[in-house]
Amino acid sequence: MLTQDATITRDQLREQIRKSVVDAQAAAEKAATAAAQGGARPGREVIVVGPTPPVGTPGVGTPPFDPDILIPQRAENIAIAFFVMCAVVIIGLPLMRAIARRIDRGASPPAAIPNDVRQQLQQISASVDAIAIEVERISEGQRFTTKMLAEKAREGTVVTPGARQ
Image: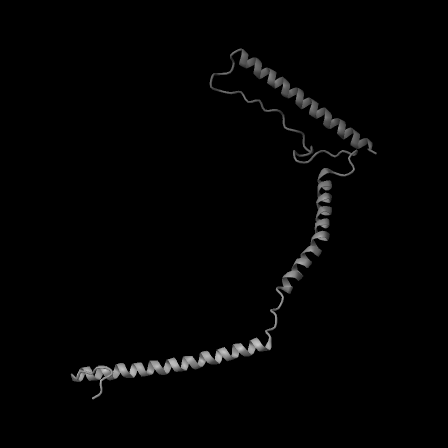
């Protein structure tokens, strides 16, 4: 329901718009007539500026109020986006929880090693340690032999391995 003041304001606004359109058309016709008669100089363009819109008119980005439209288009878009986001959260939350649980569980623990295999591994480990000690003794003997041969060579005595003195 519109009041008498709103109706008058709307009618006044329509009249101002009609007047500005008529003025713009008259200015365009005047410029076209002047250009046809040679009134415009070559190399110069005639720019016709229409009257400024009256104060209080809606801006370019804001459509005028229409009482027949119950929900503006932007509010409709926001409502649709809200409900789509709610649906995504309702469906996505359980999926993300399931994925997180699977990641937290990780891989299954390795199978237990049987006792007989464990004993064999311990025995092999002990054997490897014994072999390492024997190899160390052999290398010490080799170093000692090399050192003795180097000392004899400095003294000038020729020593042949395997020969007894």
